[in-house]
Amino acid sequence: MTAARARLSTATSEDLPPALTSLIVRYTVKKFSGGREDLLPDDIDDPELLLRALVRKYQFELQAAKSTQFRTEAQADFLKKQVDSLQEASEEAQTVAKEATSKLAYSERKVADYRSRIAALGSKWETITGFTNDELERDPSAAAKRFKGELRATQSEIFNQRMTIR
View (tube, rainbow, N blue to C red):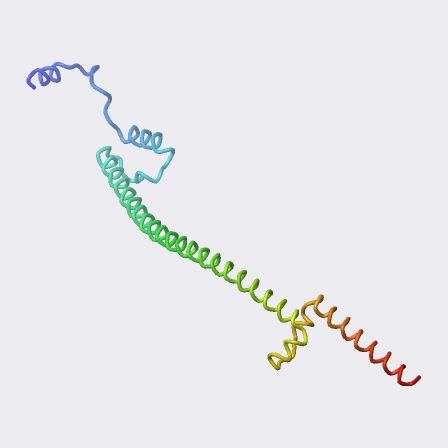
């Protein structure tokens, strides 16, 4: 320590940096802040006060940035939780939709099978159950068979009528 003090006391004015002035502080702040002029107040000329004002300004901006970061992170966490819950709900809905689709397809196949069996029974269905066979109108091939059967029955009746007339 004593050697350092001895060097300072023996240093000439040429070895010391130039005095820090308010112009140098303003120029340096403007240069390294990207041209911002709002960092230093215009009515202060003391370099020490300018530097204190600069430090306070940057501390305020740092606190504001930390506050904004905290709020943004909290909102991001909330949105992340919301996205996760929506993804889980979406996956569950897709699973349920697949199950319902497969059950519906199975049920439709069974209904089609029963309708074709009922249509194939034709008039026997009416005698077995007592209900009219509506499936004949829904199944075109069964309806065609029924109409063909009715046509034959009508033709045979007409033939019988003609025979009785003669």
